[in-house]
Length: 161
Image 1 (tube, rainbow, N blue to C red):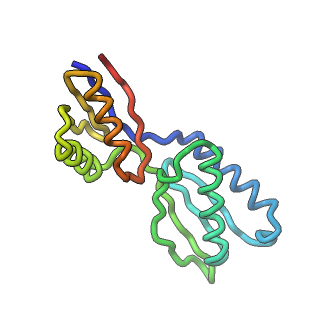
Image 2 (cartoon, one colour):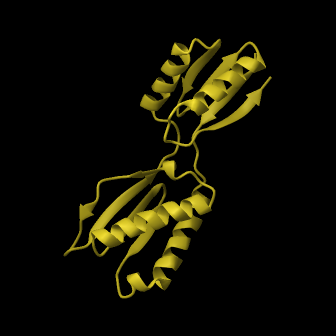
């Protein structure tokens, strides 16, 4: 029986390359001269430290631009609430999304069932397995899921006949 998997994986090496690009650009830009703005990554969490709100917003935009340059979808970044740090400085954590969360998985399964496609969808941890009788039905399911307005980047892998 033909099947494929829907996954959401982000290459952390590319994220690290994007962060290094942001660090280089912050070091050379005139508007960041003398500021104490930093960005660092630990596992799948990026921490942005900035002197004020304006610089924090600029760092967020720089991160999105560099992520896009590395051919990653900026939808893989989940910006948490910004926090006040010492003095007037700001701190914000950005989570790099890995895997499909349970709520998003259930939403995708429900949408596929509501579309009355002739496929079965099962949730397997942080990925979805879609099976059908014909290859064409699976291709319809891929097109349908791509048409959904999902902010998180999805990949379709492990296509088997």
